[in-house]
Amino acid sequence: MRTTLNLPDDLMTAVSTISKSRGTTMGEVVADLVRRGLAPVEGTGTATEKNGFTVFAGVGVPEQFGPEDVMKALDGEDAVLRKNF
Image (cartoon, rainbow, N blue to C red; front, side, top):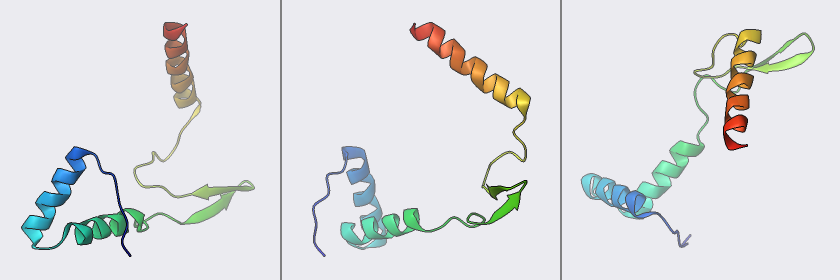
């Protein structure tokens, strides 16, 4: 299928460079990169139930996010709000 994409200059340069190094068309490179971007990440998609809630496994996610972590996040948010107020 033919379509038109508007890509920023840096992406256009990267796609062009990749297509030249692979000896393929820019369309094939874009299609490959889109397929990779849409593919499920290994290790995700698993869900369990804990205390009546669905828990999803994540990649690079800390094992636990406790009350101290919540307070740090809220403190950081408050600091941004004070700065912008």
